[in-house]
Amino acid sequence: KSIVVLISGSGSNLQAIIDACNSGAIPGKVNAVIANKADAYGLVRASEAGISTQVLSHKAYQDRDSYDLALIDAIDQYQPDLVVLAGFMRILTPAFVQHYSGRLLNIHPSLLPKYQGLNTYQRAIDAKDTEHGCSVHFVTEQLDGGPVILQAKVPLFSDDDVASLAERVHEQEHQIYPLVVRWFCQNRLQQRADQAWLDGNVL
Ligand code: GRF
View (cartoon, rainbow, N blue to C red):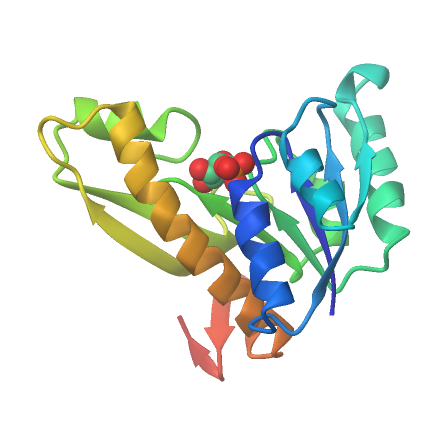
């Protein structure tokens, strides 16, 4: 399967997916990494892995619609079976989401539907939650609202700060994201309307 990954930053989830492709755990290949920021460290990870990279800065476009159309053009050069958002910090237009419907994944650092949007770690700490986590979901037009495929929970301790909690969650992200990509590339995972299905069972 052909995979395109979109990033804005460090790319540690990208790295976990690259590693899982290289080990054979994912029957697929990351054919391109596209970033909206030239200084995204994930671009270095991609280059080191011999993967094509492209920077498409949103600052060069007048509006969200024109940027997303250019993004579709860039992505479709690689004829992806799957598009993976891995810390891509942009809200996507309905046109973009519809174009990749059923083959667009995201990871979000909360136990969805809790804490959609930004600053999830601080919000969980402020709420004195005793657990936090991450969710992999299909992307729909609803921001962080698409059907959840897999979640991982971690404890949240009273002396945690954002850094310590984020580190604990990241460890789990690096487990569950490659696993979901593996399922997708094995043709076991499907989005049907607002549901995610694995091996013929609704999740
Ligand atoms: C992850 O925490 C993910 O949940 C969020 O953005 C972060 C990306 O981290 N969507 P990285 O760039 O993969 O290291």
